Image (cartoon, rainbow, N blue to C red):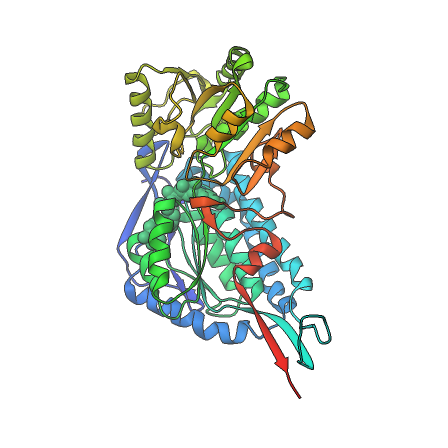
Length: 491
Ligand code: NAD
């Protein structure tokens, strides 16, 4: 067992306090050295789930009647408490997710920023809008609209960016007036659960509850629970389908942020300077390819393919691979055993099919670790458009590169998928890029960029087709936890 300093336990938090009774524990392993346990997370019981839903339903009655500004005060106090422990939380993330320190800090600081941003939004919420006398209000002599919170909400989040992605749903739900029950990811529950305990302690009892455990047990029971009125899932498409079915029994409002298979289209006039190439490398390989909107396919105009591959692979060769706590590391290991095995399988299949696989990267300190779920960053060429690595989400640092001859072909290939999260067009001609961007089926299309820093808070974020339902960011996210209540008076 590692030193106490590096060991953590993720326990539930229900109705204002931690769940201290013994529970079956799920081991949390270090992806860079899976023989090492870095902590454990509780498997919450059905009774924990029921108590958390009942606590949220009770707390909702009071929380919903506070003004948004009053709710914002608790959220800000929670953000301060998390900020005071940011270094320790980032250290936990490095150990459980495997990501480099700078990415772990980005996850924690991004989560704190979300709490503060949604607390600031409180000033725009609440109150009634008077529509009396507006065209379209018929014979009514008084018409008012107010946003009302939908009720107790469940937030289920993934392991790749655990703190940010969970608070991305929790913060708008809280400011909207919902009480919340969170089911953290079983693979990486440590930093998130600690952060949620700190936030919950800053709020009235029952407003925020945490029930760690597995999706198929704790998650499903929560989603189906009759006292829960809204569900937010960030996860894979298969999980999204299960959650939709489980939520259907009680017709819950459901917000789904699901997987992506983002195309990047490089036109023949693309600038292949080092800034572009760095942006593309970051877009493909951030969090070792385990981001929902990483670039997952690159389409290059055939006239630039050779030049692109030479320049791109020479940058990929410079990426540093190793355990996330080592200085200078760009790529940590894959977080889960299943993801690691899937990446190995995709590599084997590509080689068996005779595709060209260029694997780059250097080991941190020049030494390959004795164990760990490491996959060297790979660029695969010679594939058919319908190959699995092209049409399915790989969630690994393996990027297929395919040539195209004209724009219509590029668009047809980009859209030939059930995914529709993000996408990008790369060109020196802004007008041409914009015209092409409009033809891509996606929630967001970037021009000459494609990574987390390119996402703009003011615009809605989410997927089309099977990549999701609903939108994140500011008022769009608050809408996932609210409904319009209309009051209409006739004399
Ligand atoms: P996952 O779907 O396996 O798990 C996500 C969460 O759902 C976990 O907490 C899990 O325990 C829970 N869960 C699993 N089965 C469940 C069920 N039947 N009922 C209720 N809950 C259940 O996803 P993952 O492997 O943790 O994350 C990777 C996937 O998430 C990728 O597809 C990625 O693209 C996607 N993702 C999407 C976004 C986005 O914003 N669109 C962001 C991050 C990740």
